[in-house]
Amino acid sequence: MAANTQPIYGRTPHVVLSTPILGPTAVTATDGTGLLEPIFQADTIEGSFVDNITVKPVGGNTAATVLRVFLCSVTGPFTPGTSNTVANTNLLTELTLLATTASNNTARGEWIIPIRRALPPGWRILVGFGTSTGSAGTGYVLTTFGSSY
Image (cartoon, rainbow, N blue to C red; front, side):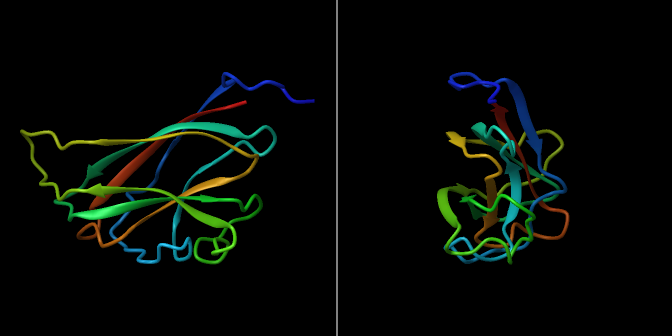
């Protein structure tokens, strides 16, 4: 029996931190294929609601790029670049990321991508960068905020 038969509000917070730093590898395909990184998986029994994704640059100077966010319906074991196909992965949204300069006296910005969607049980959110984010150890950390039903 479902824990919340009319899911208006989440039952439990579901926050996922990306690890490690995402980047610097580019995924140029915009059709849902390629080595996309899974950053969130909905609760496998009840599904989840995803409110937003926070994107923060880390490491050295980051290059300008685009972050692509995909929705993937694969619910079982997942292997990036193999499990995600044109048939089961769709582009959800994109965000232009400006070049940033690392500094000890000036904060770098962050971006918040509103998702605000309920995901079926086990579905995933995947991401990829259109171009390299810079040198090794330079890229972004993504935090996904949601809740399980």
